[in-house]
Length: 120
Image 1: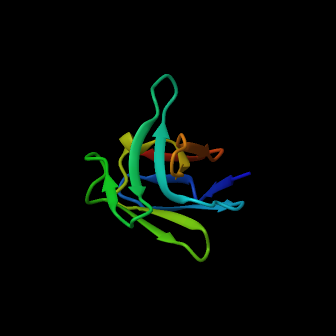
Image 2: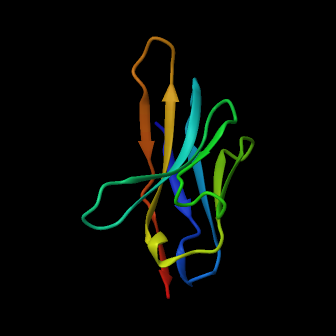
């Protein structure tokens, strides 16, 4: 069973920075990517960034140039460095593991979320 644990959220003023961490446990047999999503009350979950199993990286346009994703495979951890934060970044941030095994449906695992609040 894969378990995820996010940390690093908090409350900051606009222009500030936060660094989120997500560590996973459990034995993952197949290639997997790790991603960050965010969600506000009453809205759909929104993609933020992905560090894929082949080390390719993607960002949502809304965070490109401000956020940086990184991954430490030895520590089984993905990080999200968030700089120049804006009130629009306020959301619950969730870590996701996407496991892709040959000839099988993708398996998705979610963390419990960590709250980020940015005040003006």
